[in-house]
Image (cartoon, rainbow, N blue to C red; front, side):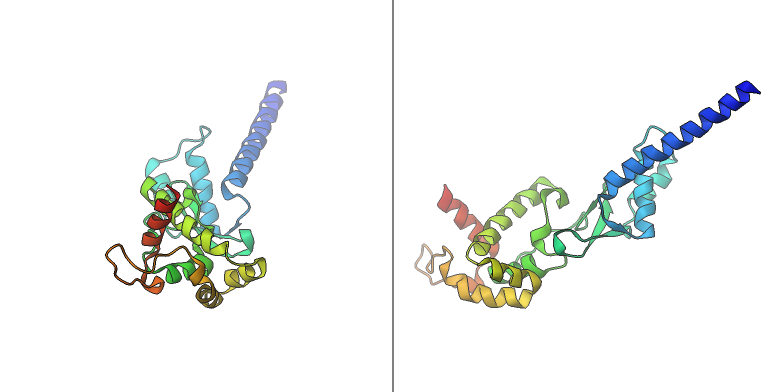
Length: 206
């Protein structure tokens, strides 16, 4: 009877330790986000799959991790945006996401008020080194524009893409932009892609 009681005690202790371990791992994985049930189940499966505590059927684990509908809500930075699960982590964009091409003004508006705002993206949201480099190029251009605005104007553009477009018109003349090409052709900033401006800014700094 003593051995049986000891065995039961050890089982209870083990169960509590397992519960605490999973709770800590899930908290780290979720990182304070507001979760849907489907996202919570996917996160739990992801933590379980990476744990040495339990061996799961690999097919079921992979199915959970590949579930593109598993999402949660991120409310950091005062912005409510959806997070998507891929490669065992929640990110603000899908794995196949690519930064948009377009003019400086159009992408500036997406930087301020896209879905999600491009300003919220980090290198951890990018699925390849090339995409990370392009995000760095984009940030160089967008932060230059932000530097031309006051704090009050920044608050306005971060609340509305329309406000971002209007304020861009007011400050675009202060951007380091050559109005004529090397061949003497006239250029207009409204028609210039953000990537072209990023390359020119990089050349100025070198």
